[in-house]
Length: 122
Image: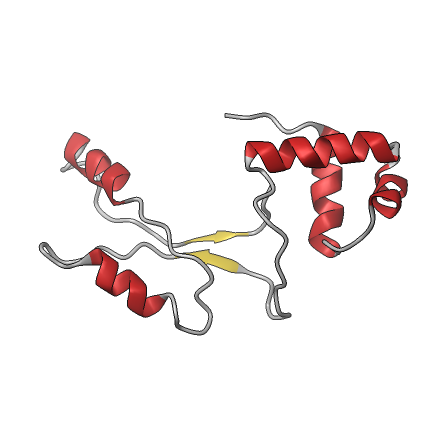
């Protein structure tokens, strides 16, 4: 697991509020030099910590991760293509192989799965 430095956490917190701010403004807010901020942002982009800068409309401010188990033989690509166009669906993850491995490793120990809310993202 990648450890995130405190300055990176501060940069991410500020970018969540305003992803369009300048490096100069961001540097002032996190208490670092512009060069330091540029270096950290570039490194987080290269590592995939920052994958893009998007616009998110106002709302309740919660993200929900919902696991859907498809029927045997179902075409996941068709289903994914359908729901990605729905309002409120921002991204679709396929973790089927990992979940299948977990179920196969402990078929009697896992009784169910749940939906988790993402309250903060680092």
